Length: 392
Image (cartoon, rainbow, N blue to C red; front, side, top):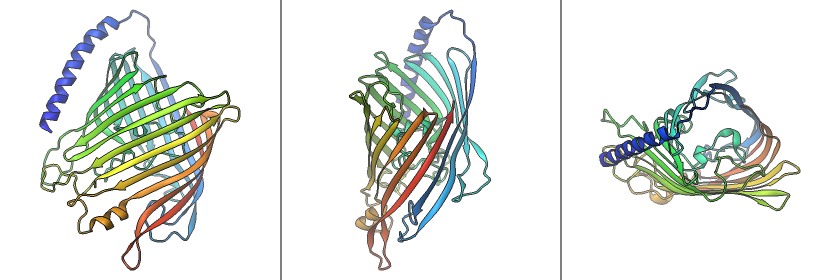
């Protein structure tokens, strides 16, 4: 890990010097007026779901109704100069409604500062959205399906998760930019990651990188283009700290099919492991079992109706190693922890991403122990009617 950090900082220094020179060449005498914007994002839904959805309960007989406000974000951005940008976003501390409190607080979700030396070299610092794949870098306001996927950037959703993050955000510094008219884009960052390793006062940096190539239009990381433009992007990335490693590839296609609409495809595959060495100085072996994750989202946007039917499939396929499963045998551990999500829905973008409605059915198949101590598959369903309001 020390060699990895040294290489990272050498690369950082080299890119910084070269892009400082380029920035001087790109300087313009054009007048600039600072700008400041404020916005809000609301996600609320009513629905029903079976007992055990997301928790692996052995019972799936009963259903419960829900009415939940699960996102209420305030967003601010400021262009301080031509090269300096600040973005701050708040979020609820917990969902409000039938499945949570009716009075909750707010927290800082994003706090990011960007300085653009040139289009090839942008430095970001603060509390930043972090992921090695596309889905983990999307914003909540531009999703095609009902919500984020479950397993494309797992283990970094809360302070109690192995990577000790906050809804996919981490503290650190990130470099990004584009070459070949921004067709080839990169991200490379060093982040706090997990800071609590028993018996150690310090921890290594978490290093996350991503490289993508845009064959057509530049990818804006929307869940769907709503019938506008042509996108075909392939990418790969990695995420590592101590014995933890995540690496994978993804592809995004949004392309018109005739005059009536366009097809959207989002697919990804990742391999994750916490390592298999319990004696390693910074071991995740008992926190993150070896696994493959798979994702497919497919939709067709009908321009005249502003409707988009879609389907989604996702799987967290556990293939644990000997030191990752405690006292359970491999078959029992893997079956209990392997989860498949599948479903579909209909999105009505009557006001684009500013205001829309999504009706969805999602099923989750998980392993569960029977009363006899055997592992069986249980499937739990969830139906949502969701409203989005985004002003920014």
